[in-house]
Image (cartoon, rainbow, N blue to C red; front, side, top):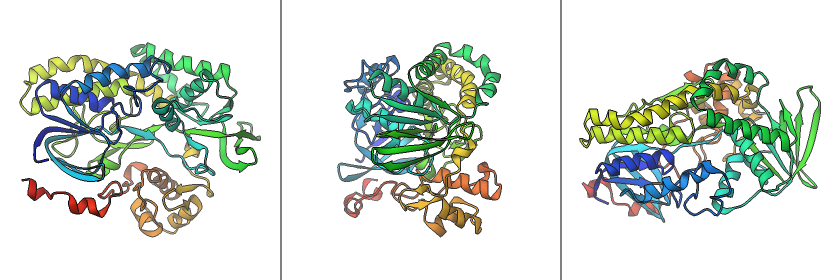
Length: 461
Protein backbone atom coordinates (compact mmCIF):
# COMPACT_ATOMS: atom_id res chain seq x y z
CA UNK A 1 0.00 0.00 0.00
CA UNK A 2 1.56 3.30 -1.07
CA UNK A 3 -1.28 5.47 0.22
CA UNK A 4 -0.65 7.81 3.13
CA UNK A 5 -3.70 7.54 5.38
CA UNK A 6 -4.88 10.43 7.46
CA UNK A 7 -5.42 8.07 10.41
CA UNK A 8 -4.45 4.49 11.17
CA UNK A 9 -6.14 2.95 14.22
CA UNK A 10 -4.74 -0.19 15.79
CA UNK A 11 -7.59 -2.04 17.50
CA UNK A 12 -11.30 -2.29 16.67
CA UNK A 13 -12.70 -2.41 20.19
CA UNK A 14 -15.08 0.22 21.61
CA UNK A 15 -12.44 2.98 21.64
CA UNK A 16 -11.00 2.22 18.21
CA UNK A 17 -14.41 1.98 16.56
CA UNK A 18 -15.54 5.30 18.05
CA UNK A 19 -12.33 7.02 16.95
CA UNK A 20 -12.87 5.74 13.41
CA UNK A 21 -16.50 6.80 13.36
CA UNK A 22 -15.51 10.39 14.17
CA UNK A 23 -12.56 10.66 11.78
CA UNK A 24 -14.41 9.04 8.87
CA UNK A 25 -17.51 11.16 9.48
CA UNK A 26 -15.42 14.30 9.18
CA UNK A 27 -13.81 13.26 5.92
CA UNK A 28 -10.46 11.80 7.00
CA UNK A 29 -9.19 8.67 5.27
CA UNK A 30 -9.17 6.08 8.05
CA UNK A 31 -7.67 2.59 8.22
CA UNK A 32 -8.47 0.29 11.16
CA UNK A 33 -6.42 -2.88 11.72
CA UNK A 34 -7.28 -5.57 14.25
CA UNK A 35 -5.99 -9.10 14.78
CA UNK A 36 -9.52 -10.46 15.28
CA UNK A 37 -11.75 -11.37 12.35
CA UNK A 38 -14.57 -9.10 13.54
CA UNK A 39 -14.73 -5.71 15.21
CA UNK A 40 -15.87 -5.41 18.82
CA UNK A 41 -12.80 -5.95 20.98
CA UNK A 42 -13.03 -8.14 24.05
CA UNK A 43 -16.15 -6.66 25.58
CA UNK A 44 -18.17 -6.72 22.35
CA UNK A 45 -16.45 -9.80 20.95
CA UNK A 46 -18.37 -11.21 17.96
CA UNK A 47 -21.36 -8.94 18.70
CA UNK A 48 -22.12 -8.80 14.99
CA UNK A 49 -22.43 -12.57 14.60
CA UNK A 50 -22.75 -14.17 18.04
CA UNK A 51 -25.70 -16.44 18.81
CA UNK A 52 -25.44 -15.13 22.39
CA UNK A 53 -26.32 -11.52 21.54
CA UNK A 54 -29.76 -11.77 23.16
CA UNK A 55 -28.69 -13.99 26.05
CA UNK A 56 -25.86 -12.12 27.77
CA UNK A 57 -27.64 -8.96 28.85
CA UNK A 58 -28.10 -5.46 27.52
CA UNK A 59 -24.46 -4.44 28.09
CA UNK A 60 -23.28 -6.95 25.49
CA UNK A 61 -26.23 -6.28 23.18
CA UNK A 62 -25.31 -2.58 23.19
CA UNK A 63 -22.26 -3.49 21.14
CA UNK A 64 -24.29 -4.56 18.10
CA UNK A 65 -25.44 -1.08 16.94
CA UNK A 66 -21.93 0.26 17.56
CA UNK A 67 -20.39 -2.48 15.41
CA UNK A 68 -22.91 -1.81 12.63
CA UNK A 69 -22.24 1.93 12.79
CA UNK A 70 -18.51 1.31 12.56
CA UNK A 71 -18.80 -1.02 9.58
CA UNK A 72 -20.88 1.59 7.75
CA UNK A 73 -18.91 4.71 8.71
CA UNK A 74 -16.59 4.72 5.70
CA UNK A 75 -13.39 3.61 7.45
CA UNK A 76 -11.48 0.72 5.88
CA UNK A 77 -11.32 -2.27 8.21
CA UNK A 78 -8.52 -4.83 7.90
CA UNK A 79 -9.31 -7.89 10.08
CA UNK A 80 -6.83 -10.61 10.98
CA UNK A 81 -3.99 -8.07 11.00
CA UNK A 82 -1.25 -8.59 13.60
CA UNK A 83 0.69 -5.35 14.17
CA UNK A 84 4.34 -6.16 14.79
CA UNK A 85 5.99 -2.73 14.70
CA UNK A 86 4.83 0.83 15.17
CA UNK A 87 6.05 4.42 14.86
CA UNK A 88 4.32 7.83 14.98
CA UNK A 89 3.84 7.84 11.20
CA UNK A 90 3.75 4.18 10.22
CA UNK A 91 2.44 0.73 11.07
CA UNK A 92 3.73 -2.72 10.12
CA UNK A 93 1.34 -5.65 10.23
CA UNK A 94 1.04 -9.25 9.13
CA UNK A 95 -2.13 -10.49 7.46
CA UNK A 96 -2.72 -13.95 5.97
CA UNK A 97 0.98 -14.69 5.85
CA UNK A 98 2.04 -11.40 4.24
CA UNK A 99 3.48 -8.34 5.94
CA UNK A 100 2.46 -4.80 5.02
CA UNK A 101 3.85 -1.34 5.67
CA UNK A 102 1.41 1.58 5.83
CA UNK A 103 1.95 5.26 6.55
CA UNK A 104 -0.29 7.79 8.27
CA UNK A 105 -0.44 11.39 9.45
CA UNK A 106 -1.78 10.18 12.83
CA UNK A 107 -1.62 6.74 14.47
CA UNK A 108 -3.97 5.71 17.29
CA UNK A 109 -3.29 2.74 19.57
CA UNK A 110 -6.55 1.31 20.90
CA UNK A 111 -5.57 -2.25 21.81
CA UNK A 112 -7.41 -2.25 25.13
CA UNK A 113 -6.72 -4.15 28.31
CA UNK A 114 -5.96 -7.71 29.42
CA UNK A 115 -6.58 -9.85 32.47
CA UNK A 116 -3.86 -9.42 35.06
CA UNK A 117 -1.71 -12.59 35.07
CA UNK A 118 -1.28 -13.75 38.67
CA UNK A 119 0.92 -16.86 38.74
CA UNK A 120 -0.05 -19.46 41.31
CA UNK A 121 0.87 -23.14 41.55
CA UNK A 122 -1.02 -25.12 38.92
CA UNK A 123 -2.28 -22.18 36.83
CA UNK A 124 -0.70 -23.68 33.69
CA UNK A 125 -2.64 -26.96 33.98
CA UNK A 126 -5.22 -27.91 31.33
CA UNK A 127 -8.66 -26.72 32.42
CA UNK A 128 -7.35 -23.57 34.11
CA UNK A 129 -8.06 -20.28 32.33
CA UNK A 130 -8.99 -16.67 32.94
CA UNK A 131 -12.58 -15.63 33.50
CA UNK A 132 -12.16 -13.24 30.61
CA UNK A 133 -11.01 -16.05 28.33
CA UNK A 134 -14.09 -18.04 29.28
CA UNK A 135 -16.23 -14.99 28.48
CA UNK A 136 -14.63 -14.71 25.03
CA UNK A 137 -15.39 -18.36 24.28
CA UNK A 138 -18.99 -17.86 25.35
CA UNK A 139 -19.48 -14.78 23.17
CA UNK A 140 -17.61 -15.97 20.09
CA UNK A 141 -18.53 -19.67 20.01
CA UNK A 142 -21.29 -20.20 22.58
CA UNK A 143 -18.95 -22.49 24.54
CA UNK A 144 -19.38 -22.99 28.28
CA UNK A 145 -16.77 -24.46 30.64
CA UNK A 146 -17.19 -28.01 31.82
CA UNK A 147 -18.49 -28.22 35.37
CA UNK A 148 -18.00 -28.34 38.20
CA UNK A 149 -16.28 -24.96 38.03
CA UNK A 150 -14.29 -23.14 40.70
CA UNK A 151 -14.03 -19.37 40.26
CA UNK A 152 -11.21 -17.60 42.05
CA UNK A 153 -10.14 -13.99 42.23
CA UNK A 154 -11.07 -10.38 42.78
CA UNK A 155 -12.73 -8.30 40.11
CA UNK A 156 -15.98 -7.71 38.25
CA UNK A 157 -15.35 -10.53 35.78
CA UNK A 158 -15.50 -13.06 38.64
CA UNK A 159 -19.02 -11.89 39.45
CA UNK A 160 -20.00 -11.82 35.78
CA UNK A 161 -18.73 -15.36 35.25
CA UNK A 162 -20.55 -16.59 38.36
CA UNK A 163 -23.82 -15.11 37.10
CA UNK A 164 -23.31 -16.71 33.67
CA UNK A 165 -22.60 -20.10 35.22
CA UNK A 166 -25.90 -19.93 37.12
CA UNK A 167 -27.91 -18.68 34.14
CA UNK A 168 -26.60 -21.46 31.88
CA UNK A 169 -26.87 -24.17 34.56
CA UNK A 170 -23.13 -24.89 34.82
CA UNK A 171 -22.43 -26.40 38.27
CA UNK A 172 -20.10 -24.31 40.44
CA UNK A 173 -18.23 -25.82 43.40
CA UNK A 174 -17.44 -22.42 44.92
CA UNK A 175 -16.51 -18.83 44.25
CA UNK A 176 -13.26 -17.98 46.06
CA UNK A 177 -13.08 -14.22 46.55
CA UNK A 178 -9.51 -13.12 47.23
CA UNK A 179 -10.14 -9.40 47.84
CA UNK A 180 -9.23 -7.88 51.19
CA UNK A 181 -12.09 -7.55 53.66
CA UNK A 182 -11.20 -3.92 54.30
CA UNK A 183 -11.66 -2.91 50.67
CA UNK A 184 -15.32 -2.04 51.10
CA UNK A 185 -14.55 0.31 53.99
CA UNK A 186 -11.94 2.14 51.92
CA UNK A 187 -14.33 2.25 48.96
CA UNK A 188 -17.09 3.86 51.01
CA UNK A 189 -14.96 6.98 51.37
CA UNK A 190 -15.76 7.55 47.69
CA UNK A 191 -19.43 6.58 47.89
CA UNK A 192 -20.55 9.96 46.57
CA UNK A 193 -19.25 8.88 43.17
CA UNK A 194 -22.07 6.33 43.00
CA UNK A 195 -24.49 9.17 42.29
CA UNK A 196 -22.70 9.84 39.00
CA UNK A 197 -23.48 6.36 37.60
CA UNK A 198 -26.26 4.81 39.72
CA UNK A 199 -27.37 2.39 37.01
CA UNK A 200 -23.85 1.02 36.53
CA UNK A 201 -23.40 0.67 40.29
CA UNK A 202 -26.72 -1.11 40.76
CA UNK A 203 -25.83 -3.51 37.96
CA UNK A 204 -22.69 -4.47 39.88
CA UNK A 205 -24.64 -4.83 43.12
CA UNK A 206 -27.12 -7.06 41.31
CA UNK A 207 -24.33 -9.33 40.06
CA UNK A 208 -22.83 -9.55 43.55
CA UNK A 209 -26.25 -10.34 45.08
CA UNK A 210 -26.92 -13.08 42.53
CA UNK A 211 -23.49 -14.57 43.17
CA UNK A 212 -23.98 -14.60 46.94
CA UNK A 213 -27.51 -16.00 46.60
CA UNK A 214 -26.88 -18.77 44.09
CA UNK A 215 -23.27 -19.81 44.68
CA UNK A 216 -21.15 -20.91 47.60
CA UNK A 217 -18.85 -17.93 48.24
CA UNK A 218 -15.68 -17.94 50.32
CA UNK A 219 -14.60 -14.45 51.38
CA UNK A 220 -10.93 -13.72 51.96
CA UNK A 221 -9.62 -16.92 50.37
CA UNK A 222 -5.83 -17.07 50.10
CA UNK A 223 -2.86 -19.44 49.55
CA UNK A 224 -4.62 -20.77 46.46
CA UNK A 225 -3.04 -23.57 44.44
CA UNK A 226 -4.27 -26.07 41.86
CA UNK A 227 -3.24 -29.67 41.33
CA UNK A 228 -4.33 -32.59 39.17
CA UNK A 229 -6.50 -35.31 40.67
CA UNK A 230 -8.34 -38.43 39.59
CA UNK A 231 -11.47 -36.30 39.10
CA UNK A 232 -9.67 -33.67 37.05
CA UNK A 233 -8.48 -30.70 39.12
CA UNK A 234 -8.30 -29.96 42.81
CA UNK A 235 -8.19 -26.44 44.21
CA UNK A 236 -6.51 -25.90 47.57
CA UNK A 237 -7.06 -22.72 49.56
CA UNK A 238 -6.99 -21.26 53.06
CA UNK A 239 -9.92 -19.50 54.72
CA UNK A 240 -9.79 -16.28 56.72
CA UNK A 241 -9.55 -18.33 59.89
CA UNK A 242 -6.51 -20.18 58.54
CA UNK A 243 -8.24 -23.49 57.85
CA UNK A 244 -7.18 -25.29 54.69
CA UNK A 245 -9.81 -26.61 52.32
CA UNK A 246 -9.92 -28.27 48.91
CA UNK A 247 -12.45 -28.44 46.09
CA UNK A 248 -12.82 -30.74 43.09
CA UNK A 249 -13.28 -29.13 39.70
CA UNK A 250 -13.17 -29.80 35.99
CA UNK A 251 -12.50 -26.13 35.19
CA UNK A 252 -10.92 -23.34 37.22
CA UNK A 253 -11.49 -19.71 36.20
CA UNK A 254 -9.02 -17.16 37.58
CA UNK A 255 -9.31 -13.37 37.60
CA UNK A 256 -7.41 -10.70 39.52
CA UNK A 257 -8.54 -7.58 37.73
CA UNK A 258 -7.78 -5.96 34.38
CA UNK A 259 -4.67 -4.02 33.37
CA UNK A 260 -3.72 -2.11 30.20
CA UNK A 261 -2.06 -4.07 27.41
CA UNK A 262 1.32 -2.29 27.23
CA UNK A 263 3.37 -4.38 24.81
CA UNK A 264 2.70 -2.14 21.84
CA UNK A 265 3.13 1.07 23.84
CA UNK A 266 6.43 -0.23 25.21
CA UNK A 267 7.43 -1.04 21.64
CA UNK A 268 6.64 2.57 20.68
CA UNK A 269 8.80 3.80 23.60
CA UNK A 270 5.97 5.91 25.02
CA UNK A 271 6.15 7.42 28.49
CA UNK A 272 4.23 5.39 31.08
CA UNK A 273 2.85 6.14 34.54
CA UNK A 274 2.21 3.87 37.52
CA UNK A 275 -1.25 3.45 39.08
CA UNK A 276 -0.55 2.68 42.72
CA UNK A 277 -4.09 1.72 43.68
CA UNK A 278 -4.70 -0.80 40.89
CA UNK A 279 -0.98 -1.56 40.53
CA UNK A 280 -0.44 -1.32 36.82
CA UNK A 281 1.53 0.72 34.30
CA UNK A 282 -0.37 2.72 31.74
CA UNK A 283 0.43 5.17 28.99
CA UNK A 284 0.78 8.77 30.12
CA UNK A 285 -1.75 10.48 27.84
CA UNK A 286 -4.12 13.44 28.08
CA UNK A 287 -7.88 13.40 27.47
CA UNK A 288 -7.31 13.82 23.73
CA UNK A 289 -5.04 10.77 23.62
CA UNK A 290 -1.85 12.79 23.14
CA UNK A 291 1.20 10.82 24.28
CA UNK A 292 4.88 11.63 24.67
CA UNK A 293 5.34 10.93 20.94
CA UNK A 294 3.75 13.54 18.62
CA UNK A 295 1.51 11.88 16.06
CA UNK A 296 1.01 8.76 18.16
CA UNK A 297 -2.12 8.67 20.34
CA UNK A 298 -3.94 6.21 22.55
CA UNK A 299 -7.65 5.65 23.15
CA UNK A 300 -9.54 3.58 25.71
CA UNK A 301 -8.34 1.06 28.27
CA UNK A 302 -4.80 0.97 26.90
CA UNK A 303 -4.33 4.22 28.82
CA UNK A 304 -6.53 3.82 31.91
CA UNK A 305 -9.00 0.99 32.55
CA UNK A 306 -12.45 2.49 33.06
CA UNK A 307 -14.76 0.20 31.07
CA UNK A 308 -16.68 0.30 27.80
CA UNK A 309 -18.61 3.54 28.31
CA UNK A 310 -15.47 5.52 29.08
CA UNK A 311 -13.55 3.82 26.26
CA UNK A 312 -16.19 4.82 23.70
CA UNK A 313 -16.21 8.41 24.93
CA UNK A 314 -12.41 8.56 24.95
CA UNK A 315 -12.26 7.18 21.43
CA UNK A 316 -14.68 9.85 20.24
CA UNK A 317 -12.63 12.61 21.90
CA UNK A 318 -9.45 11.35 20.25
CA UNK A 319 -11.17 11.23 16.88
CA UNK A 320 -12.48 14.78 17.25
CA UNK A 321 -9.08 16.17 18.22
CA UNK A 322 -7.43 14.44 15.27
CA UNK A 323 -10.00 16.15 13.04
CA UNK A 324 -9.08 19.45 14.66
CA UNK A 325 -5.34 18.86 14.21
CA UNK A 326 -5.69 17.81 10.58
CA UNK A 327 -7.85 20.80 9.72
CA UNK A 328 -11.30 19.20 9.48
CA UNK A 329 -12.70 20.91 12.58
CA UNK A 330 -12.12 24.27 14.19
CA UNK A 331 -11.23 24.39 17.86
CA UNK A 332 -14.69 25.74 18.69
CA UNK A 333 -16.43 22.96 16.72
CA UNK A 334 -14.26 20.32 18.35
CA UNK A 335 -15.13 21.60 21.80
CA UNK A 336 -18.82 21.78 20.97
CA UNK A 337 -18.96 18.22 19.63
CA UNK A 338 -16.83 16.96 22.51
CA UNK A 339 -19.22 18.14 25.26
CA UNK A 340 -21.42 14.99 25.54
CA UNK A 341 -18.34 12.75 25.60
CA UNK A 342 -16.64 14.88 28.24
CA UNK A 343 -19.75 14.53 30.42
CA UNK A 344 -19.55 10.73 30.13
CA UNK A 345 -15.86 10.80 31.09
CA UNK A 346 -16.65 13.00 34.08
CA UNK A 347 -19.27 10.54 35.34
CA UNK A 348 -16.94 7.60 34.87
CA UNK A 349 -14.13 9.40 36.68
CA UNK A 350 -16.43 10.18 39.60
CA UNK A 351 -17.21 6.50 40.23
CA UNK A 352 -13.72 5.16 39.46
CA UNK A 353 -12.16 5.81 42.91
CA UNK A 354 -14.90 3.66 44.50
CA UNK A 355 -14.27 0.83 42.04
CA UNK A 356 -10.49 1.09 42.37
CA UNK A 357 -10.71 0.76 46.15
CA UNK A 358 -13.30 -2.02 46.11
CA UNK A 359 -11.38 -4.12 43.60
CA UNK A 360 -7.89 -3.17 44.78
CA UNK A 361 -5.60 -6.20 44.34
CA UNK A 362 -4.47 -8.08 47.42
CA UNK A 363 -0.68 -7.67 47.82
CA UNK A 364 -0.19 -11.32 48.81
CA UNK A 365 -1.80 -12.45 45.53
CA UNK A 366 0.81 -10.48 43.57
CA UNK A 367 3.77 -12.30 45.13
CA UNK A 368 3.97 -15.73 43.45
CA UNK A 369 4.49 -18.92 45.45
CA UNK A 370 7.99 -20.34 44.82
CA UNK A 371 6.47 -23.34 43.00
CA UNK A 372 4.42 -21.18 40.61
CA UNK A 373 5.58 -20.84 37.01
CA UNK A 374 5.97 -17.11 36.37
CA UNK A 375 7.34 -17.11 32.82
CA UNK A 376 5.26 -19.57 30.82
CA UNK A 377 7.37 -19.18 27.67
CA UNK A 378 10.59 -20.26 29.40
CA UNK A 379 8.91 -22.30 32.19
CA UNK A 380 10.66 -20.38 34.97
CA UNK A 381 9.37 -20.66 38.53
CA UNK A 382 9.12 -17.90 41.09
CA UNK A 383 11.59 -19.80 43.28
CA UNK A 384 14.28 -19.73 40.60
CA UNK A 385 13.64 -16.09 39.66
CA UNK A 386 13.59 -15.11 43.34
CA UNK A 387 17.12 -16.47 43.75
CA UNK A 388 18.34 -14.43 40.77
CA UNK A 389 16.67 -11.30 42.10
CA UNK A 390 18.11 -11.69 45.60
CA UNK A 391 21.59 -12.18 44.15
CA UNK A 392 21.49 -8.63 42.84
CA UNK A 393 19.03 -8.01 40.00
CA UNK A 394 17.25 -4.68 40.41
CA UNK A 395 15.30 -4.30 37.17
CA UNK A 396 13.11 -6.49 34.94
CA UNK A 397 15.59 -6.18 32.08
CA UNK A 398 18.39 -7.21 34.46
CA UNK A 399 16.52 -10.36 35.47
CA UNK A 400 15.72 -10.93 31.80
CA UNK A 401 19.42 -10.86 30.92
CA UNK A 402 20.34 -13.28 33.69
CA UNK A 403 17.46 -15.75 33.75
CA UNK A 404 15.51 -15.20 30.45
CA UNK A 405 12.00 -14.24 31.69
CA UNK A 406 10.50 -12.06 28.99
CA UNK A 407 12.66 -13.62 26.26
CA UNK A 408 9.79 -15.72 24.90
CA UNK A 409 7.29 -14.94 22.17
CA UNK A 410 4.99 -12.92 24.48
CA UNK A 411 7.86 -10.50 25.32
CA UNK A 412 6.89 -10.26 28.98
CA UNK A 413 3.15 -9.85 28.47
CA UNK A 414 2.51 -12.61 31.00
CA UNK A 415 5.49 -12.42 33.35
CA UNK A 416 6.46 -8.74 33.25
CA UNK A 417 4.20 -7.48 36.01
CA UNK A 418 4.93 -10.43 38.34
CA UNK A 419 8.71 -10.10 37.90
CA UNK A 420 8.53 -6.39 38.72
CA UNK A 421 6.42 -7.07 41.82
CA UNK A 422 8.99 -9.64 42.97
CA UNK A 423 11.88 -7.19 42.48
CA UNK A 424 10.08 -4.40 44.34
CA UNK A 425 9.25 -6.72 47.25
CA UNK A 426 12.72 -8.26 47.49
CA UNK A 427 14.63 -4.98 47.46
CA UNK A 428 12.07 -2.60 48.97
CA UNK A 429 11.82 -0.58 45.77
CA UNK A 430 8.96 1.53 44.48
CA UNK A 431 7.20 0.02 41.47
CA UNK A 432 6.84 3.41 39.80
CA UNK A 433 10.64 3.68 39.63
CA UNK A 434 11.12 0.29 38.02
CA UNK A 435 11.34 0.25 34.22
CA UNK A 436 9.24 -2.21 32.26
CA UNK A 437 10.60 -4.83 29.92
CA UNK A 438 11.81 -3.34 26.66
CA UNK A 439 9.73 -4.66 23.75
CA UNK A 440 11.37 -5.26 20.37
CA UNK A 441 10.01 -5.76 16.86
CA UNK A 442 8.58 -8.01 15.64
CA UNK A 443 5.99 -8.01 18.40
CA UNK A 444 4.70 -11.37 17.17
CA UNK A 445 6.61 -14.28 15.60
CA UNK A 446 7.02 -13.84 11.84
CA UNK A 447 8.31 -16.02 9.04
CA UNK A 448 11.54 -14.65 7.61
CA UNK A 449 9.91 -14.96 4.19
CA UNK A 450 7.38 -12.30 5.15
CA UNK A 451 10.14 -9.80 5.86
CA UNK A 452 11.93 -10.64 2.63
CA UNK A 453 8.76 -10.27 0.54
CA UNK A 454 7.55 -7.06 2.19
CA UNK A 455 8.29 -3.91 0.17
CA UNK A 456 10.77 -1.69 1.99
CA UNK A 457 9.66 1.79 3.09
CA UNK A 458 11.99 3.37 0.51
CA UNK A 459 10.17 1.53 -2.30
CA UNK A 460 6.89 3.11 -1.20
CA UNK A 461 8.10 6.71 -0.92
